[in-house]
Image (cartoon, rainbow, N blue to C red; front, top):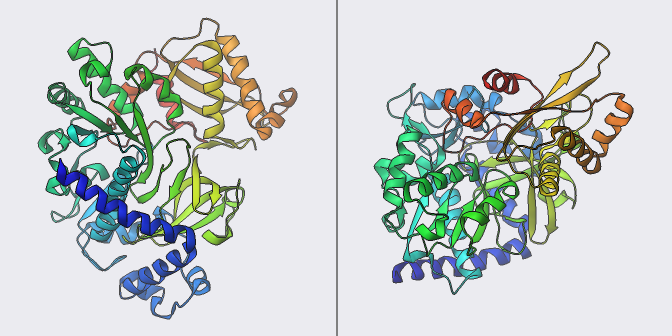
Length: 502
């Protein structure tokens, strides 16, 4: 107990010194990092290809190194997965975080270096705990266990020397002993790849422990919570874990889940959000009274940004951190200490403050509906659903949507399939209210809906119970960081769900 307080106090002291630099010299911090990354990787295959040795400034960096997607770097990553070293990054790579972002067929294999583990992901975890203890000094989560809902990993199909799997599994297996002492479940259970068996064993263990904190994607956390309540016969989780105080979350918008968590913890708990992806740890909610995140400038990640409205251009212009403006939506471009060079991660953010840099996550470049020029973003959809559900006393558990052409004249609509906890008695009323809420939130959608000239009223389907769970199970995507694709400009996901729905 004392060792944790001592460690956290040391972390907090160092963090406060670093945050001062974030405020006083943010661009210098990033510039120094850019120079380090270039110099470190100058003798790699990628570094030699783009002549890193002659890159001396930002102009050289942005002109010499092309913007990249996963597909652009994939041939390098395949070499690395086969055991080849010094390709994108000089230190030995033996881990790959397997990520599909949302439930798709193709997985991405993101290289994980010893530097990205220590100086990014672990550093982020330590900062998060220090921030929490600073904001709530009277609290002490170290009296109990911390449950982490993670995924699994396995030996690579390309090399027996390589391991690949969920980032959370990579992190858990390498945690220092003083952290593992507080973790639940035990490692043999935490790393199991059978999600349903793992959740059963986790439940059996957790109901007998003094759990004080929990981390995981909200949707899978609710599945775990349901198992706990079924097994114990309790009405809420405070009856199971009376000393529970902190839920750490990230990955998807938490607001649609907040009401459910408040029901699970009726005495109230604390929440802290982080932006921790397979590619890196980007931000932490350091002020509990605000929903924006502090951009972490010294986690081995150099940031650039593309204005979202220009993101689909063949050669979009890129701006540095010093050039971003408040209120604009940007696609993130990252260069990391694991060898992702000017990588378009696909996540979009909007800055709320520039000193220090704070932001909110607005979605993903691929999570929108824009077949008809409507530019409907994920945050529009979730705000609209939240408003209508509040007004009509409903709760949506899962959903996805896709465009649908309704004739040969280019007209169409959006087709939605929604799984409700309590389905609306009047679906047409819900449909009208939802459509109106979308119009109020998005002027482009409203313009395309004008007199049904381009977009007609949305089509809504009520999903059968546990439809999305069954669909994800069929695809082998239960647990971990797997998420339902909310909006897609292709019909692949919705067609599969409609076929399975009954």
